[in-house]
Structures are given as structure tokens and as C-alpha cells.
Length: 199
Image (cartoon, rainbow, N blue to C red; front, top):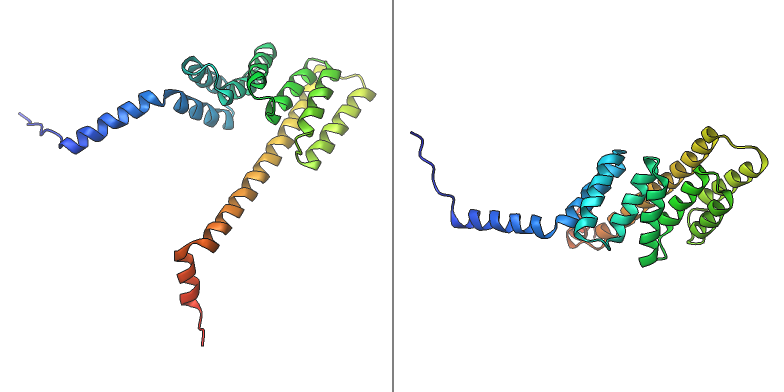
């Protein structure tokens, strides 16, 4: 018969703290899991995680925005708009919420509403290239009759350009952080100074 040894008190305490942390941060972890699922394109799973986060904290702006994006990508435009407008009611300066409200309006043929949302989105100082792309898209919609397929294509193009601009910004910020950390790190100073042949 196998004998089980009792875990040391510190291990049991650490386990209890971990369980409590999981319970207390349920909303945060559901929100984080939703963001990961959203980034990988698993929109149904993302929506489920965001709904779980909102059940714990109905005022979570990030969960509302995440739910709005997931619902938009699933084609549930009314639900997407509801979540995004709830987020904007709490925090009016959310460029991404205006972007997805514009995309939702564009997909439904509400070009005037889409233009207003895109103008608000651009007012936050987003990438000039992205703003120019949106402007060209809206001019195209004024010049030709747009089928549902064309609207999907154009909306996806704007969303892709926005994602690309976000990735470039993230990379730039990461590079700046790494540069600042390197220049001001005491260990980096000694590595650089130790490699110099100063006379």
C-alpha cells in the first residue's frame, strides 16, 4: 500500500493563496483569456470569456469592448453596438470602440453613421496611413453601389490596417522600453564599461 506524505505547511499555504487569487481575480483572468482568444481569432470563445468577466464586473470597460469586437466579428452587429455603446457611456475616449461602431455601421450600409464614427476615431491621432485608408474607403462607397461582399471586403481592410498599425505601435513601444531598460540598467552599465578598454 502506497503511503502519502503530507505536504509541507508552506506548500499548502501557497496552494491556498493561489486558489484565493484565482477566485478573487476571476474577472481579470476571464478578461485576459478573452483578449487572448480574440487575438487568435477564436471569437465565440472570446465572447464567452468576456460575458463571464461581465457577470463578475458588469462595468468592466475592457470586457465590454472585447465583447463588442467579438460580437462584431461573429456578425451580431446589434449586440456588438450595445456592448460598445455601454463601454463609451463609461469612457467616451475609446478609439477602438468608435472604430468598431464605424465598421458595424459600414457593414450594415449606414455610411453616414460609419463616417461619423470613423471621424471620431481619427480625431484621437491615429496613424495617418490608417486615416487615409479609411478616407479612401468612404470615398469609394460614395462613388459605387456597394454589395454586401464589397462591404465585408472594405470593413475587413480597415480592421486589418488598424491591427497592423496597432502592432507597429506595440513593437515601437517595446523597442523603446528595451532601449530605456538597457541604457539605465546598472548591470548594462557594468557590462558596457567592463568591455571598454579605457586608458
